Image 1: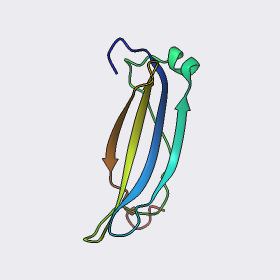
Image 2 (image 1 turned 45 degrees about the vertical axis):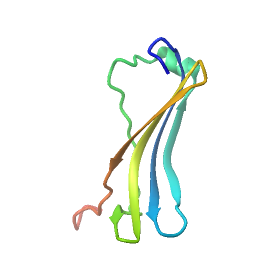
Image 3 (image 1 turned 180 degrees about the vertical axis):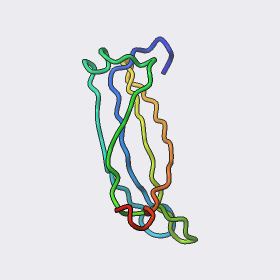
Image 4 (image 1 turned 120 degrees about the horizontal axis):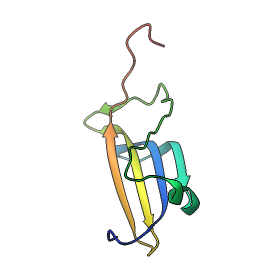
Length: 100
């Protein structure tokens, strides 16, 4: 994807996935796709805000045999058919007692 290649669609998701021994699993917690009409109206040079209420589980986990990881994933689809994927991990931890 080049800088002159127009953006056709954008997908944003919040998800968790497992790594380690056995089958790998993943679940999308939040998903939004911005179609061409939406992208055309967005100011992509400005900060964009994403808000979602996260679940109480599964919590992030770093074990020897299994890891549970959360991330925000951005997929940008160009008019030429190419795409760019960027992922930013984060930790989902239990809130302090009394904050439920």
